[in-house]
Image (cartoon, rainbow, N blue to C red; front, top):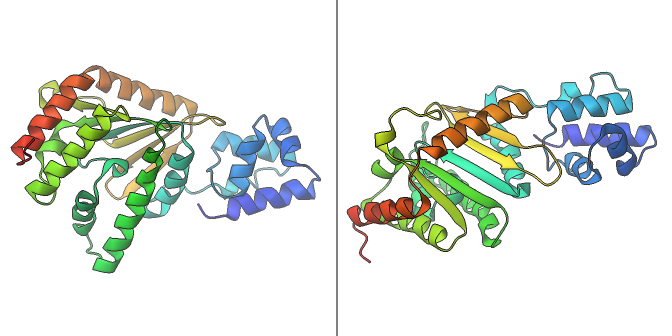
Length: 264
């Protein structure tokens, strides 16, 4: 998102002679949420912006600084990356690739190396490093709680070599069996399900309402509308109810890794 919104918010707050806590009280928000927005670490929701404009008597000036809804994933994902670092719970649904937070280095390199238009080896290296840096949030043994709902299709479609796939699938098994994440596989036998349209990420926070992020071909969008977030949460719950239980999913993952040549 850049720091434009945060800079403007801080400028308007200080011009009004308000502390972060005073503004937070007036806008019915937490002081830490205000601080995160001013520092550029959080994306304000439309409702946040409306309340801040009302508290500061700025008309719709702050609302007008919200990021455009239709922007490229590459530009927009920086905001999502910042949000995931603050989330206390993340639930992912993936249809085409293993979610970025759960990718091994070799799998990530295979995915990013197949980008179109092609990118240089140097740029691919940079993106791989960024992706692995994101995954460091899983080094905390508890937070964020992470659930991964995976369509069986992404297990059957080889990315890179068979060795790459075997290592990647066993990485998921290791995280699941250690209790760090929950993994549920939506088997082919389910047929159509409510999440076939997009990749979906749901995020919950300590000090702001939950958000959703959907991603399709070349586009991504953060959803902050409570009704839309609830609808996407319901879609996730419906799909999850048809998925294999944790133990059965882990068993299927082990079988898949064996099919790719992994030897226990």
